[in-house]
Amino acid sequence: MGGPEIERLIGLLAKLPGLGPRSARRAALKMLQQPESRMLPLAAALAEAARAVTPCSLCGNLDSRDPCAICADTVRERGLICVVESVGDLWALERAGVHHGLYHVLGGTLSALGGVGPEDLNLSPLLARVGEGGVREVILALSATVDGAATAHWLADRLASAGVTISRVAQGVPMGGALEALDDGTLAAALRARRAS
Ligand SMILES: [Zn+2]
Image (cartoon, protein in one colour):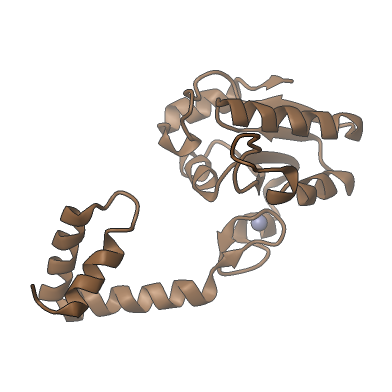
């Protein structure tokens, strides 16, 4: 129906998280019916974001500037680093406004079964950041999975001699759930009630 352009558009939209073929068709139709007001601005925003946004060389956050706005913010507490698995987790913590220090995005967790080793994650730059001094506490905000726990253990082990407090977010992070799935109140409680590990 409608030609290869429409099929291609629907196919690409259907690959986005949260969109199956059915919602992709609805989104495509909505855009095609209002090309000037919906489709062209979206196309321009996509191209611009693809061109401008890169991972922050310090923390791994995504931003159009490097260092990112969070790393460059002099008001934030620089001695406090919250370690998260994904940029989505960082965004969730920022939305909740519960962390006023810096972040470090690992890009996943260690996984013996999944074949993910330390060299596959953004781990060495974190050890280097702590090694440079000035860091007082590292908060491990990793999910309560076997892999999340293994990653937290690995990091706590490597940072043990660095003279920094290592803490973990408290219960409330559901098994297998990412931080971004939590509501703001639960996130705030989990971060406030963190324990030294
Ligand atoms: Zn950054």
